Image (cartoon, rainbow, N blue to C red; front, side, top):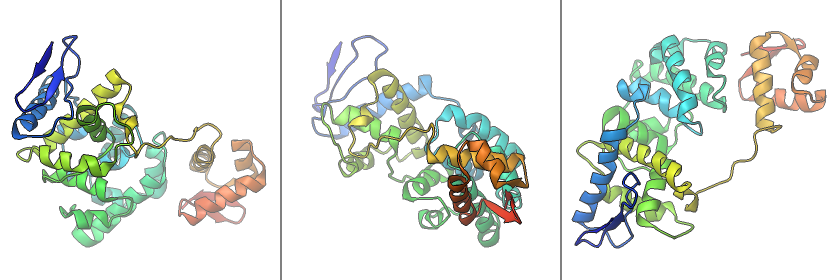
Length: 296
């Protein structure tokens, strides 16, 4: 069944349960209302129940946003739950050892995020008495927090009507407003995100957009791939990143391990292993005592 509104916005629901699609025919008050209705109706009926949504404290939001950077929700959920049980607030995280933080982080990848998260907690304890600031400018100064992540934290933790774009949001707007187009740039999407923002309840709105983006990826083969921002990720197997992770896990599990043993762990010669170990030392992950290595 095809439905068309007087605003020029058209969408189709040919199989009953399919996502509705809006063509790029201009944007009016009526088309904004229709777009919001589509997104929020899906969220009301099929929104995901996620632990950081159930209890969206500033701390829970902050931890989840760092974990969700480049990591799927299904992998994050159990790690998030274990993490907040071990470190229930910024002060407990700030006083935790790096080894205990990294141990709980294993399986999420991109271990620099764990270091940045702990460093952020220490800064917040020192400068803000363990309280997360609401200012996007202040949030952006914390380690590992860019403008988009700071904006997302401001939305979900403090319900601020901030405009930002991330992968799922980008997918939704490309699908609805740029049918058949390739190489869509964020600067084309940004005004639409701003115009359609449901300012009365921005956290619910962005959660709804996120979940609709997941639906679109499952149903339409990810329309977000038509974005100019899409970048192919290099294979993880036998990559430098995989070797780094193996070395870090080996040092975590065997404090005082030698370079030769680390080389055996990643099945590489001592020369390459030494370069990776030096890299991890420079980044503050591990330290050397004599000829043995441990977490800093």
